[in-house]
Image 1: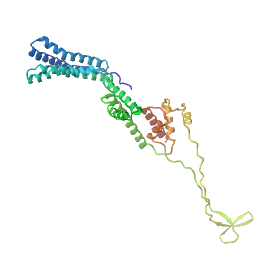
Image 2: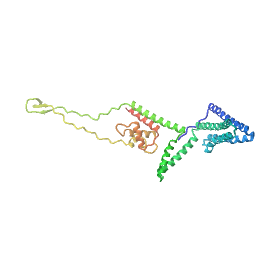
Image 3: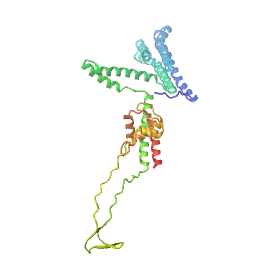
Image 4: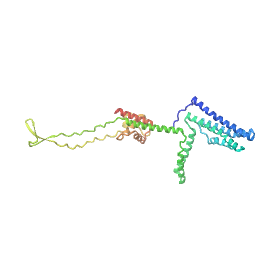
Length: 350
């Protein structure tokens, strides 16, 4: 799958993102100051307070910097880093609640360290979105999808080949649960799926318009049956007799209308079907081979052969289906362009 070209942040975007990151850092620092003040009010020792801040907000800050650095390098973060961003502030919150003397102080001491946790997660998410915008690669989404696909492959193999029937049934159910998670949160996958559907809708609309505006084709005249005219028959008497003089001899002829003899329609011999190789030879291109890449001219030759392989000629959808069934290789956009060229050639001939 091709990734979009790398984009750079504009000056305005950089300023806005920088302005959004500053409050995160500031509020994280304020949370550390608040925790230091809370612990100092209880133990009256700055060293103890600094130790609690270092174990909670300080360690969280370190993990946040690791998360941002790995994200900016286009790499996914280990599970320990992601878990630690929430575990360490939670430990600091529990510590503050445990040393508090009143319920009110316990609530305040427990909430204060969470400012660093939110700031770290916010900076990590912002860095991730910047990387996705610039490079088109989402390392976290790729990591999740890779893990899901690995589990899905294992359970599909287990459901098909495991000797225990209960294990097969369990893996079958698990496979369907994992299938629901494939591609979840992957913005690039969604964008590519939208592009595929847009191409299909464009192809359908193009085929519909080609069918609406195509010129009618008049069927050729296959043959004319002549009705025989009345003929003259010689008679012996004078009734209904017309004398005809031929030289010195008078011949008496009786005119009567003879019914037309039944004429058996003559069926012209069926012409042998034109082969793909013959069409390619007329077009002056090498004969297309299924399974090998085709040029644009060869695509037109294959579509012409498939379109007129039946009576009436195949539509775009039918021709594309026959194209795929025949094993020919060609992208949908190239096939659509070749079909448009074929239709334009037919209209010009008409």
